Image (tube, rainbow, N blue to C red; front, top):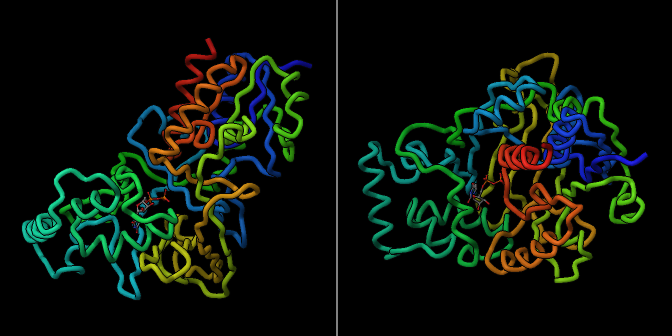
Length: 372
Ligand code: UDP
């Protein structure tokens, strides 16, 4: 049988495309080299707790269309992300807000906080921030940069802040209010029952083959469909022939603990440079409304997250969207444009530090252009 579309990768981009293609009356086969669907949003239950196996995913968006779209496939809880930063045992609120400024400087009013930031910005003499360090100091001043940004960022990206693009730090809000919500998003939450169930609902009625590596038998798969939707890494598609794009990989050390409450929050970031992990996730707190003295759940699952430079064989997680990689990506993009049978999409296919909502928006855009 020849399919209209072969979708390579059962993550969000692939699942949205497959769902829409089927709805448009197309025949679709989805394959994935892993033994599970859902890509890096995959969750699995451990002792009744949904564990985010490939790192914490908190759905947030300002895009109403995307929010309504995902709500077809899952009911979302009202979890609000509010990580805590641990700098050598000192705890600070994130994102940067009045609680953070009060703890850091003892300031009480927004005016005092603004004055403190302005004073440190002036001292640094930065007019136009050219890299992450300059951007961070001009947003929140040197003290916060030193304690809450520098160590975390250099562990996360494995590069000095001076060599990283400024946009990465602009993901975080800076507020002169007492608001600990990490995201400036109208809609936020986590699918009740986990992301895997949500993606399974997207893929309902669609043929999915797991444990199948497209690139290993590319010719065989290509012969099976008129078009391919490829959501793997763009450089791997081309056998790295122009060189490798840089990615950060992540390793998790996950433990089941015989205590009900390890850290009292879903995410604690370790922002000093010495602690080897970047953050610890305590998965049960993503499930909004769960109580620490819940007798049915006396245990907890935590994951320590370690960041490393990607090398062949590792899972790529974060594209390093700096200038050098941007130029190489553009060269790959030109090759991709010549592949008329293949659509490249998703965080890896487009080499872009996409959030989940942006991946879905990008997939829906593609569907509109492709499935007419
Ligand atoms: N960041 C930081 N300190 C923190 C949290 C984040 O300096 O405590 C910086 C860091 O450079 C990070 C970026 O902000 O890569 C974006 O953080 P975000 O939480 O959005 O990263 P993600 O959850 O995608 O890993």
